[in-house]
Length: 310
Image (cartoon, rainbow, N blue to C red; front, side, top):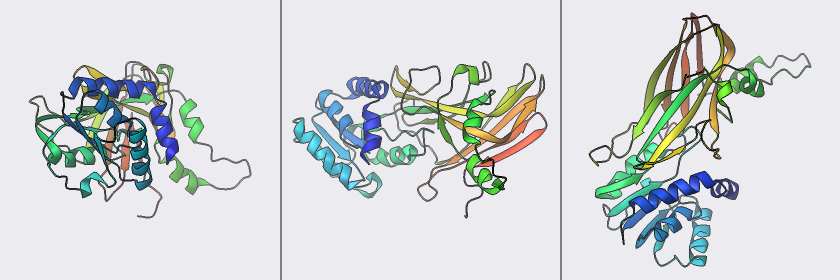
């Protein structure tokens, strides 16, 4: 429970981005709702930014108790109320009075920690003209053209002669947290695959579904072997303040996400690569991601639930 919190707090890029976003958005004596507050770090930043009241909502009772101790140690207990519950299960006195709703429930794949569900529910706590952090999240994709990432996850040949095909199928139908470099990617191939907007251009909250689909296409300039896809995200926390997990951005604890193909697929010059992507992060589903399509005339289909009992 505490190790993920340590990793978050050790991420200076993340911490600075949220600090700047809170400083830019919290009005003097404003009210802030911190969803998934963990140790209470963002609540402390909100108080430092000028908030007169912060409600820190944390579903894990042990973490909620720890946050209370951290807040007391930093003289913020009178301004921060810790609520040990999931935000969608609570009804707060004075709902609709938060100037800022902040939720750092961003996962490696952006949405698997239920950021969309948290912020869509949190609209009921936001006052007219209030804002959310993040305002929008964009998921990016690029084909992977070197074998390095795929070789790091396709390790099912033990050398004993046993048939582990079934386990390999389940294993490769997965999302892998990895660090990639530009040399691993199709040159110039990064595309914006999906975007969730939580505060629209007119200042009103967005309406984003949990079930999402997108398609991306690339045309090969030369014969190339495709090993999978790399995903990363950019989060607009406040106007002009962007947190990025791109392989070209300063490193964060999120790294990137590698979606492998079951086998490498080769395409020729002018062949088209097609990626059909879907994600479902409804509470009842958890997180299901599929990626399918073709490289030239060679089809593929991957599903992180493939091989597991339904």
